[in-house]
Length: 97
Image 1 (cartoon, rainbow, N blue to C red):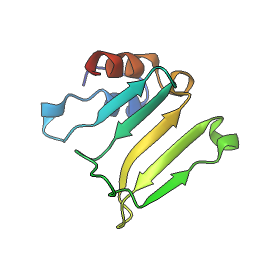
Image 2 (image 1 turned 30 degrees about the vertical axis):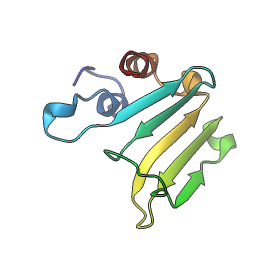
Image 3 (image 1 turned 90 degrees about the horizontal axis):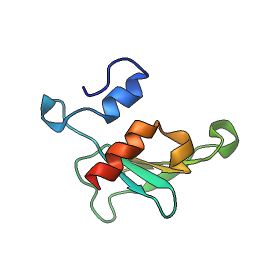
């Protein structure tokens, strides 16, 4: 792990790919302040069959969960990412981008 302490979600997002537990890819588009967290190694065109929008009032923003036909969560889109994700996650996505 790159981060010690802090919320477990941050630690998972910052995990190095070769720790034997898989990896997650995070992309960030600064022009629209949107991040996408890939939980699957790769998402093929058409693989997402359902997008569940989280209640904007409860999360104070727009977060979408993408599922495949079997109900497996493939990825998470975060709009307004700079106010929803820890700054180190955004910086890591920029560095890898």
